[in-house]
Length: 53
Image (cartoon, rainbow, N blue to C red):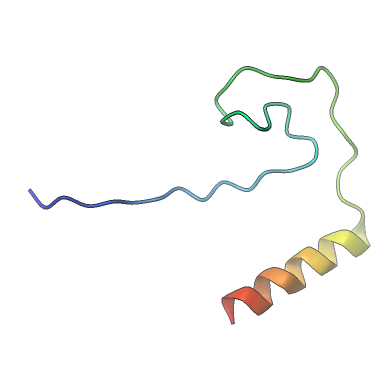
């Protein structure tokens, strides 16, 4: 067997009820925030694309 390390990349959102705990953790909020508006979503997508090259 070869030792190895792997990561799971799980995006977190404003409406994430468990933040800052793990996604499988207990909810910290009753309500969820509004989803990202279109402008913020475009900026986020552009930032990710710049990061990935």
